[in-house]
Length: 78
Image (cartoon, rainbow, N blue to C red; front, side):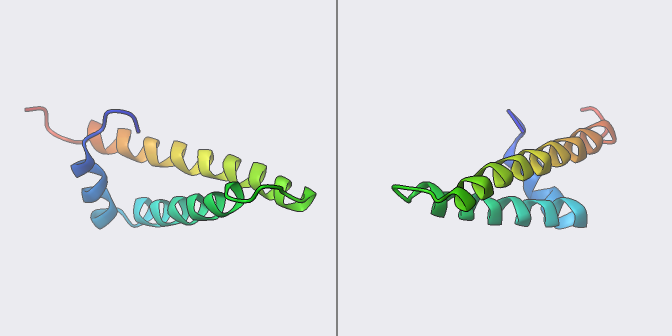
């Protein structure tokens, strides 16, 4: 979600249940990734987890962007 105003995200978090859930999942994945990247060495399972989390996070971000595009398309133009 590139140059989208923060207000649109906040509005969708309050009005769109799917967007709200995706944002929460994205935040949880981000927290776990921070835990992993803070380590000096990752075991093989941790490395696999890191790659998997990054992929999931991107999928969630793409879905959130789709919802935001749909929301923008249904907004009356000023």
